[in-house]
View 1 (cartoon, helix red, strand yellow):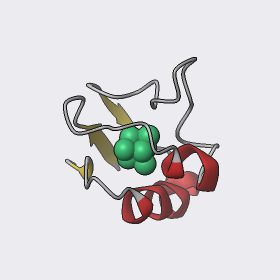
View 2 (tube, protein in one colour; view 1 turned 45 degrees about the vertical axis):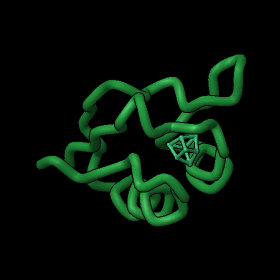
View 3 (cartoon, protein in one colour; view 1 turned 180 degrees about the vertical axis):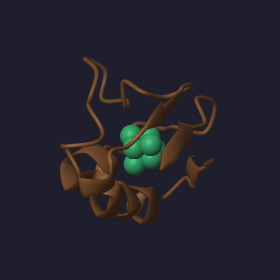
Length: 65
Ligand code: SF4
């Protein structure tokens, strides 16, 4: 699975990295470090990645591959 995080939409709610810290990481300002990037998620963390995606109130996390 490949995940993309829209940098412009990320508002730093932190729900993604609170619920799925194995996939998403906070930066010093409370935004997700991976905003504005695409990255591969290993098969064993795909469920976690989906939990974070569904919890994001801004809809900025998407599956791109
Ligand atoms: S839950 Fe969404 S808005 Fe909040 S930090 Fe994560 S990606 Fe950004």
